[in-house]
Image (cartoon, one colour):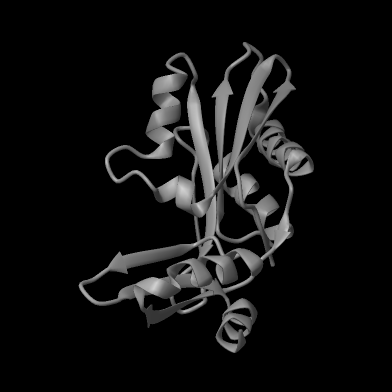
Length: 188
């Protein structure tokens, strides 16, 4: 399985219709609890006819969860073809959102499905895909005098996802990294 660590964008044109495709991480797709990324794109592109999406992510039981939306396009002609491309590339923990501007020429259901699939394929060509590694949480406690040592160790292992809680007599740490990195960290 593969994933992305940052967002990518690519514009595909088919018969004068524009497909602006955004490939984003699952965190970016679900980060803002007040307004979804789809609604942000609708605000940014008020004259766009549709904002279609497809998403694949792993839940807490390591099961792949999938969802897609045609956003008023004919049923099964937009979200499902986009989702099928993500499936074919074995991508997880990411979403693709496609803003469509109608160009005046009707594509038909088959043409529309091919156009949405092509737009996702094009953004994937531009994207940097990475191998997916399951991340685990690990908590530990240190004294204040060891904070700099811990930060140094985390930088050495390229662990960037950590939280610190400065208590009265100690510092509580919570890191999120691959199993391999956590084992190396414990052995340091």
